[in-house]
Image (cartoon, rainbow, N blue to C red):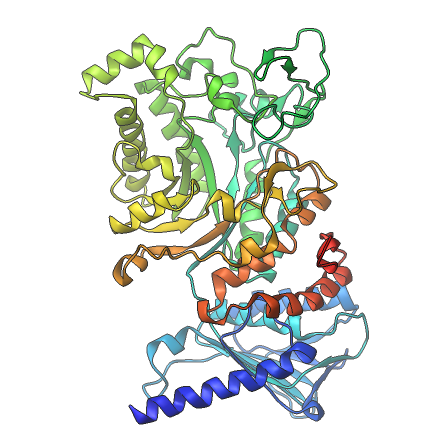
Length: 568
């Protein structure tokens, strides 16, 4: 016990000493588990003469990422070799090591080690993905000014992630983003050591993925004839004025109307484009989880194939407004032909995506349309379903059984708990933490993604100069979020798989706005996902963020510069 206490004291002292030096010299986000800074005279100098050594072909993805980053941002073109040459005096060595009985406990096997000193940088791990994470750390050790000689401080870092699931979401339904933008977004996830990309491909406002068996999903469902102008009138938006136009539909509050711009909007990804994006993400050790929404948020699909809705004659169309969507008939009818359609769609999706996980939505299903449908009510009686919540559960269970038969697992928003949770499902808790807590207590995996803490489409400043969802989510709130609720005991806490930030695109139509909304809040999220809980320190994070802003400037990334002024 005395030895363990001494070891803990030495490590604590080491980390404390490093923290005193790290403000000026080393500013890494997310914060590493262990960091020791060496002498300034031992710094490594990276130039065009530096050689990258990588004897393992499995590390080619890490090599390529580093080479491309150095060329794009510093104009450096490094040579790659598979065997060490003693004549090379400046080298970066990536090496995949093998565990041995004499090494530290198992948890240590899930680390990467980065050592930088005069003449050499070594990045090693038993895990190729962690070496890639080490490359992201190396990138943050580089200067933030362009030069042909880059000074890298002498450091020793041992690091590993806190959570296995570290995700970000992108909604491409409200606004469509081309492949180049999606790839750029994936790069940002990689730079922040995230490993899951939740691709929200279908919703009321557009169907974005080619399904060969049902071509009208993209011929019809991928396009809408206009988009809402401004925010939906309602709580918090009472003072917003709306222009009254002919044929506008009046809504509450009184005298408020919806105005759309009348501009056709849309697009979709071909299956070949999807494969290309999947490979691009895989090269960065990122798994893409596709989302196909059901049983609600389905107006784009129903516009294409109205026979799968509860009222095929109602005249479905791709939605042009967002918010208050439960007023509209946006649910699939729970018929055999509908389930056949959804199974066909999921079959094509699962054949495209290597991911073990398929997100099926499950949120905000307005039960009123099932109540109004005689066919649905008859189906409920035939299956002894007491109410529409039980029908929701039946719907999710049936889809889960099909997905499981293909060797995959479903993820759903926390509404999939309604009426009873599907036995193998993973819950993504967005309506606060209640759903996640309930699922963890049932010993089912949970991804925490509460709206009030991790929806990055919310405003960073209430007097923001850009249209955004009319809710406030400052950087500090994101940073201070803790994904493991205090209500869970140690055993239940093991079922918190990780955390995810979400970016809904109602008011986001281009890459610059995407960047503005996620940066720097994605930095805060990355520290939640990766760093140890006891290491988090908001003032220290803000200090490290100053260097990150300079790096964003170097990379040409748009971000909210108001954070440079602490009292905007």
